[in-house]
Length: 154
Image (cartoon, rainbow, N blue to C red):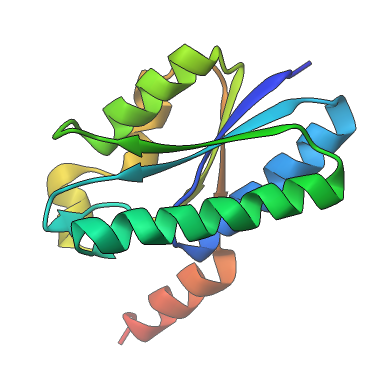
């Protein structure tokens, strides 16, 4: 089964739901998690919204500290990493991390189709799904997506 699971984490609810699923799976199969946050230096970070460079790194440090606590309480071996995209795309940075970690599964949140930006540049999850050579488990925040759909139905 899976022994090395990469979890892509951002500030979204779907990413935190994905982390919960990855923790359950890691506990069940005694896998090691690598939880990664990508820090982009673009003004508009596709994963986390509009952020400054320091705010992105500080948020990532806080999130990964929380992840380490969750893993320790759950008895899951965990490696955390902040990945500096260095101008590369976020999916490319995540795929490089998965390869370096020798991940046999990638777990990530997906937001579902949201807006015109997604149609113009594609989503991170979609790009990973199309390019990954290992299985990808995507988790969406169904409640939030349903609320978004209902709000835009009129």
